[in-house]
Length: 444
Ligand SMILES: Cc1cc2nc3c(=O)[nH]c(=O)nc-3n(C[C@H](O)[C@H](O)[C@H](O)COP(=O)(O)OP(=O)(O)OC[C@H]3O[C@@H](n4cnc5c(N)ncnc54)[C@H](O)[C@@H]3O)c2cc1C
Image 1 (cartoon, rainbow, N blue to C red):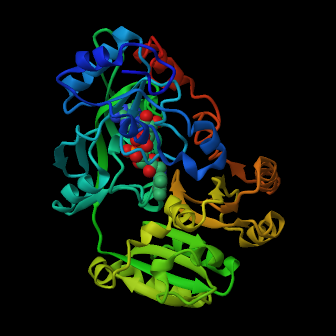
Image 2 (cartoon, rainbow, N blue to C red):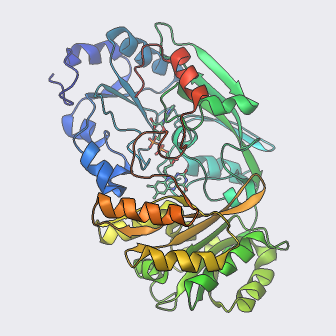
Image 3 (cartoon, protein in one colour):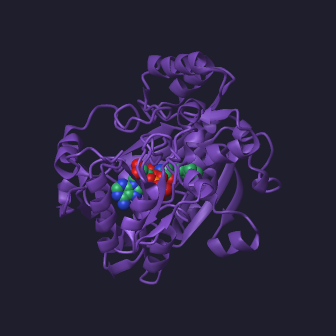
């Protein structure tokens, strides 16, 4: 068997045999498919990563099988990449060094559901976790819109916030991640258990400093969530209404998103449900808060377009409203036009709609803003995930500078280095644990 990556020249047939009884995938087309994630959102990452492949995929079903994979790779000095659903946006699960891809999706048991928590294996899909919680009147404190194909291990290792974060904060905030079990990559892989604040030692380390096998997460009481969509004459009004809804005392939304009218044109499945050419406010609020929200929308000059419970939504053939929000907004545009890309930007003062108007003027017509409101440390904050019509790195840099000149922090979505993207600075705790849990530096 040849090296698919063109980087690791060992006898891959013999290596695969040593992995038995673990299921392996060696068909080059399938290995190449599992070497990709959603890095193609970024034209820059696409250029850098489109030619990077692993050499073999292992699909362990149990922790024992996972240990065996790690042992064999450790013994042969083979680089390892962990992969859940492969929905990360920064090429985190791309095997840049080649080697073994370990796919976790068969380690997917839900182990325990209790009052305020759920424990699962790392490869469980978040939609399945939410289904298991539903039976107990609960739901995940937050989840990404990719829940149907993304794993909890991938979210804990690579994600940060999601639907629910306006109510419960970021994944890293106290109480959201209760316990993480992770294996080291050594001759005899050891299990390490991280609880409380210690979970941050492996959370958002992109699978570089330990192999997550189990997680225990916060669950919250489920509400009768109603999706509301309203449109506004201009972005300022939609944004101001969004901030008001996110911070109002009498409303407890789990998601508030504001989307530029030009982006809404790329939502064919909402055609006929929304007035054309207007900026969009999309929210999830508990049924008992709908009246208050509708009053707020009217006060802010908005026009109500839809209020939908889940059954009505399904009957109307409309996707989940969260499929038009967070990073799904970008996906809706990319489905029609691959020349779009995006960025991740923190807004300095979420209450200042006038500052946003000035920023939008300076950004120009190739940047279409889209804001999500979330809660960090108890405060409402706004993040902008704009659609950017990509015309080259120079222009992207200029756009980033414009944001920065307006006091915004850019968390670059066009890098596959954890320090330059979601985290901004090197996390020395992550690095220390990498030395300890992955002494040979095989996880990449
Ligand atoms: C349309 C769209 C919407 C999205 N929305 C959000 C969002 O709202 N919030 C958000 O945070 N993200 C979002 N994302 C990014 C991504 O979907 C999520 O972070 C998701 O949870 C990743 O899960 P996954 O199973 O696909 O992980 P993968 O992409 O497979 O892996 C992600 C990272 O985790 C590592 N990893 C996977 N499993 C393990 C393990 N067991 N142990 C150690 N490391 C592991 C991988 O090596 C990789 O570095 C979105 C992406 C898309 C394409």
